Amino acid sequence: MTRSVDVKRCVRCGRCVTSCPMGILKCKEGPAAFTSDAEDLCIYCGHCIAACPEDAVCIAELPAEMFPTLHGAAANIGQLQELFDGRRSIREFEERPVEREKIERILTAVATTPVACGGNPPPVTVINGRERVAKLIPPMMEFYRKFSKGMTSPLFRPLFRLMMGKHMFKAMSEFMPMVTRMVEYYDATGNDCMTWGAPSLLLFHTPPGSVGATFDPVICCTYAMIAAHAQGLGTTMIGMAPPFINKNPCVKKELGIPAGNNVLISLIVGYPTLRYSRGIRRTVAANWVE
Ligand SMILES: Cc1cc2nc3c(=O)[nH]c(=O)nc-3n(C[C@H](O)[C@H](O)[C@H](O)COP(=O)(O)O)c2cc1C
Ligand code: SF4
Ligand code: SF4
Image (cartoon, rainbow, N blue to C red):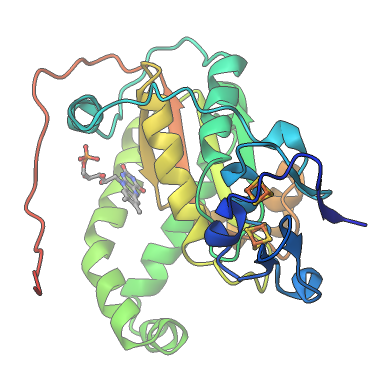
């Protein structure tokens, strides 16, 4: 049996029943129990286990060590806002590497993200060490050199438009002068304006056909960014690395990323050289309907 309720422990409080988004636990005249369709409907969100004050709920796929005790010592909204205010996209890094333990703490934060259909968050590839990250820069610049040429060529432009669709093509056309400048800057100076000299690069990807494919990795990356910042590290989300990696089966293979997986977003991580004195609060176009 993969799931059960320990009837000796159950105090019939009904919390597991209330917390289950799929309604597959019942607790009417006796201890809580799973209904017969539990196997088919469970999304493995773990709410029933986390809600139970008696540790009475057991699902084999969700072992007890996945559920840390909550101590009620979470940051309050003021502390959290201070953390958000202090985060900036960092593009200047010290040469020192990031300790493995700090990246593991980042991954622990990622392990708490909401996932579209429940279950584990999508995979992360950790490229650790500047030498390893730097290996990606020349082929990445070559990729963008070709891309920039293609997008500005009268012969290939219509083809790109067809492949990308009208809206993406328009967005990319507006973005192109910046890409061209980055390539020219790299050619002239050899400076890395893709991963900005960072010692670590995290790639967030998803297997083909997963329901949350277009957003789960971005949520994970956002958590990673905040968890890094909370440890004194600096980060920047890098949207330019994924297209290059996705279009290069050899690079994917070298990095151990399954061929079918799609890298959606990446994050550079390192120790920032700059400390900021002020944050920035932009405008959120909130439309209140009450
Ligand atoms: C999805 C996404 C992709 C991004 N890609 C890049 C990138 O490829 N290179 C880069 O230097 N910055 C990149 N950025 C960083 C943004 O430029 C940066 O967040 C923005 O300028 C605001 O600065 P702040 O993060 O310091 O508030 C990206 C940010 C996001 C959210
Ligand atoms: S893991 Fe989630 S969906 Fe499955 S039984 Fe528990 S609460 Fe319900
Ligand atoms: S939350 Fe735990 S104690 Fe309460 S009804 Fe469910 S199994 Fe029983």
